[in-house]
Image 1 (cartoon, helix red, strand yellow):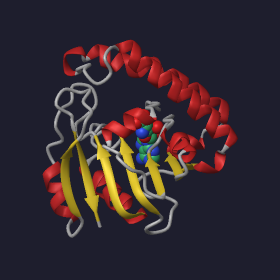
Image 2: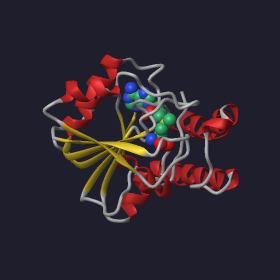
Image 3: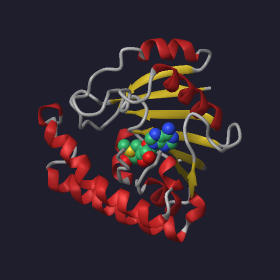
Image 4: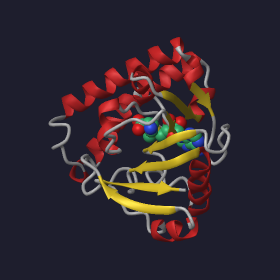
Length: 215
Ligand SMILES: C[S@@+](CC[C@H](N)C(=O)[O-])C[C@H]1O[C@@H](n2cnc3c(N)ncnc32)[C@H](O)[C@@H]1O
């Protein structure tokens, strides 16, 4: 599995973040620099990921190896991606390399921010975070995780949030296929309120929407 390293700038656009609440969970954060950069802005920011169980040298290796592997997926599905947000592949690569460097530095200097955990069971109390973000796990890996897993994972993300959960994107990895059971999942989540909202970011063609859940 890829442990990718999206930057704060990518998160800001994918989740249309205009202001930051007091506490944020990034689940599952992989090698993203979002937590480090949000913490630098004064947020009580925590990252959770199953990859944080790895010994540090292995985590470093996995994050570094995931950089070219992520780019390969884009190359293999070139017609399914657009570049207006990044400008060009070099800018994307620069953002990801900088993000990986920032993550790898922060995970060693502030390890308390990085918690090993696995959906659909997170090691946090109910309502621990004002905002919970989920980038490129749910829906992205619908070929690996089934409908029941997604429902349990969504309920868990809602459980640890005090007010809001945001998930991006709503399509599968690679060619960007739709997730056929998404509307049914949102029905099953009721009384949790759900809204699909447009965001100022698009990379996979047409994937410019996030899912917003409110308890
Ligand atoms: C594609 S990466 C996304 C990382 C980061 N959010 C980003 O946008 O760059 C997906 C991450 O989900 C983690 N992951 C996969 N299944 C998981 C699970 N069941 N529980 C926790 N983390 C999981 C992987 O270790 C990986 O770091």
